[in-house]
Length: 193
Ligand SMILES: O=P(O)(O)OC[C@H]1O[C@H](OP(=O)(O)OP(=O)(O)O)[C@H](O)[C@@H]1O
Ligand SMILES: O=C(O)c1cc(=O)[nH]c(=O)[nH]1
Ligand SMILES: [Mg+2]
Image (cartoon, rainbow, N blue to C red; front, side):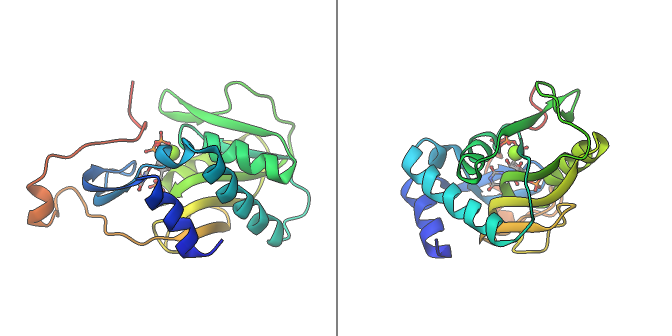
């Protein structure tokens, strides 16, 4: 899929929102990609994740034992990408604020690819990489549908992205006036209890 085809799938689903958003990292942005609105549609999700699986295969990582995704956003694309790669999918979810593989067992030395929906700063991916390395996994790569950093983020392992989409993000104490004038909303799950 080309970059335009990927972005069209998000646009057609009404997933590219404008307003004032608090991102997972705490940064603020006038644009938010509400991926859940794309994952509503199995046909769009299948197309995107098949293309991501093709990129992962083309990276020549060798055998992959598992795809593992950070909840909540990574769950659906992780499962669907794993389906195209023909490997099992698992997820990490937050417990006391940390990503843990709560529901699964993984053998030491397992070769894993992390599948994320969106990378902005790479923080959530890095936390996932670290949690899995602590369990003895070999993390081959982090793959994502959209890289909002356009290659600048450090996810803690080589990044494979289907599409770059660079949009502004600001520190909370350094907002442009037009953003400061709009009440902020936080759509993601980090910090929810
Ligand atoms: O690269 P980062 O700066 O970490 O930002 C990207 C992360 O933000 C979102 O997750 P979020 O924590 O908002 O929750 P969600 O997965 O439930 O949407 C998204 O799913 C990524 O995991
Ligand atoms: O950085 C984030 O938290 C983030 C950005 C975005 O556009 N979409 C999303 O789900 N999370
Ligand atoms: Mg997430």
